Length: 447
Image (cartoon, rainbow, N blue to C red; front, side):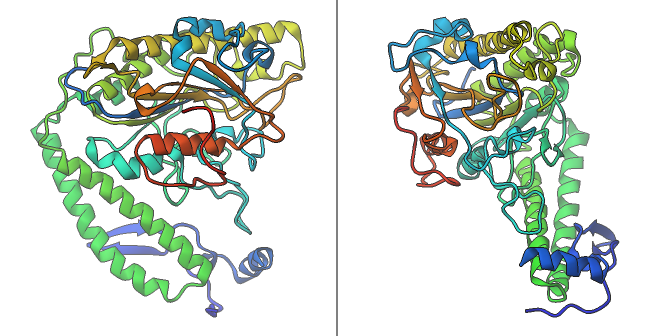
């Protein structure tokens, strides 16, 4: 075991290359020696190719479970009051009930684990440690085929905080990938060509970062030998994230001379605001419209979209979604919560209709697009933040072999984990793997 010196590493320690500094993450070696000892004790559309796409759509705060889950199951089930919003798409979606993340802790961390299935406190001595999300497993395998390996969308930009994430996507180290919440910025990023000055700026930035990284890696190798095992792991994870950032920039360079799709902004409400109640419907529809355009132009094949962060959100008339999730069984609050659920499904209905109306190679875009919709929270019969029997449906993707028009009901106490469904979505996107987190196999009944 490496023996640390009695002198802590300076908190402002940086790796320097070509006069530019990269700050290191907080390492145990930067802490006073007493603090380190305590930690050690704890540790003992047009022109699109026919290709599979996938979008994971997340709604927070659970649903009115009384109006959500049908009373029967199988292919002959009767649509519940809430699901009737999707009646015209009955043959293009399946409802799945009873699934849970067996390691989920409930609370407001539903989005943190919805696509990872991680036990957030699995690493001794750490309050939070996530793992790679299903979308990024897919993006790693097929992302090189499109301009953007994946898109991360949310009503709050950036990454948020641990247990209050603004994104559903996490890389191989469990590092959150920042989300975009501005329709205007998203549209420009996907479809507005770079001018000459932007092109030169991208090339210059890439050259600078490559030079910095090459120099920094040498210093990191030298520094690594002075650190303990835990700090070495932190440094390695940090440098992997730095390398991934550099690779994303490299992709921009590789695609810089490939023209972006010519997509007009007509009819798109690009100025709509995500956190303004009166703009809520316009913003959701616009972000879904841009997602549709990204798929139709084969700009990306993988999207995560957190419609709202946990403990927040609005209904179609600006109602407080989180407040209503603490309904305590009150009939009036449950009715309002069901209205929000139907509002969300109306947005989904519009999106599915748009995908189904677009044809490519004798199939609809919906047939080639898997839409996973749900929440990482169930507020149950009395309100609250439960991590079991999560509301969930899957639509589209018939070209990938999905069967629909059914309610797949499971016993939430004995049923398979949600990671089984995630593994199914990963495999059907063409990724060769037999496991994902705590999965026991793929989910029986979806194909």
